[in-house]
Length: 408
Image 1 (cartoon, rainbow, N blue to C red):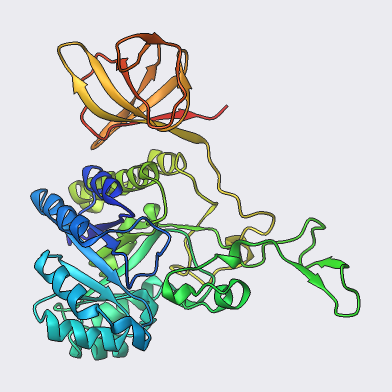
Image 2 (cartoon, rainbow, N blue to C red):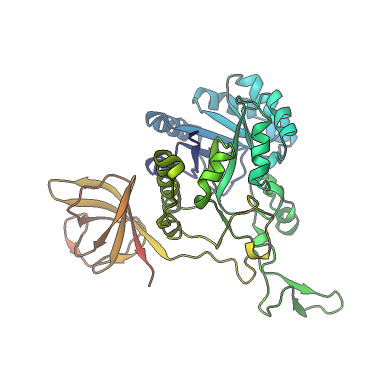
């Protein structure tokens, strides 16, 4: 079988390492300039160098986003930035602007070029056009069905890779090309500063009746008329692979390390099971239950099987479903003392029942019976953000194991 790449988001260096440890084949991330996630932590050039070295030491890849719609002023300093990315040995640049494409080809002629979903590639003729311009991979528009993806694959050469989003938040505008945020909040979604007005609560007001609000939907509390459910295609990996996709992309550079670990691990395990079982593969429903332990909206399959209907939107609120709290990260393990070194990420205390996530393994149940502070003194709880504590655990744990607690 053709084994697709599992591509994960990395909003900062910790998330990059988490994504790789939990099974991503590659990560995509942004620098401080030229990308569409200005509110992610993002990476300085020195951090990109460190990230690439770490990923390459694990035989994984790093792609950098430069997918803004560039204005004249954006080209100031862009040559030096591209040269720095080339010197850092990044594995590809994600872009959407023809001018940026031309500059990358000039400055770094051997750089792999990925065309962003922002470019709205919806057919094989366009894919061929971009391939002739030097594009190595097309990140397809999100509005395509599986049959359309298959047709694109059938009519394009093997030298052109195709990638598609398979999990995460869905934008209500065509492949993210949205002017709503710019109009309502003065923050340009096409330049990385989206205010997400599609998640806001809307009412209808008649001009001659100011202050008199009417529900847009049959609910007097208002309605979230643009609020899409989250994409989730983990149950349909065989169909995705059969369509000819080279890379399966997870959305979420703004999401937490815990989110990245949970989602990547679930997809990794299913892809590995599919690779082993082949035609005998049967989806393991526990993977969906794992995905639901990360914050999410109700799930949808987007456009893959049919055009979305009202069932693919949530009209009453835009809140995430959060059934678990991420409470700690294992930073080290002391086998001689049987102690795990934990960095607190949320308040936890003696008596809490936790689940310990382990990269590449099933989680284990754990009851907190003792907590030691940095001085080895017994304490009842870990209340301080990023406090270092020690937990007695008789199972050796590696760095980046995560502790989570079910909400009650």
